[in-house]
Length: 314
Image (cartoon, rainbow, N blue to C red):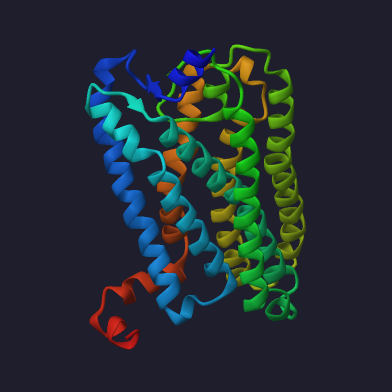
């Protein structure tokens, strides 16, 4: 038993895409380009939201929080994955796996709550425009953001602990490209029904409850938008909400397919595709969705390319 535990602490082998070796080099190039775009897009949104006074509204405060999340989200997994795709060594230390699992779960949990908060912000702006400055004042936004990040990291502590304490009897080959809950639970050498039940409850709370809240909120928003007489104002409200709904749909439905199911029914190939989608594709596309569909952000980015903008921000 001591030998088993010792071997489990030595690290894990991440199989990744080694069953399709001909795919590894093309995927390395694709993921590297996606990662560069994710870094560029999210850092640009953060800088412009913080420095441009015309983007000082609560909406862009939460958008910059989302960009920071996505920036950290991709950085927690993609560099390790790129190293495994390029080289023959496909291992990760035990501590590295725990850190990756904890950070990825924490950021994903935080994003679940943050997307719901962003929906409420849109509801307050569109349905309660006169009270909006009071409802979403700067101090309250800071408290909400702090609580959101804290909740996400607290949830990750529980889920990561439940996952890592399951005995693996020396098993260390993970059929995935990073350390994730369903893949790690497949290594357990004992009955994991209790772990699965606890994780499903937490997953449902963090995924289904916020998603239900978002859909209900947008029901009220749709009613309010239809009552707007100005077609220009109606289109602007619809455009802003459409960007958020697109981000929500990409993130939630792929995450639900992974985390609100028994890990015993986990399909490796489907799991990898879903993880690629919400772990790389969504964080890469998010800043471009908000940029390409938002006139204010595009204008702010154009201003940021001028010398006068940086002189004023000093």
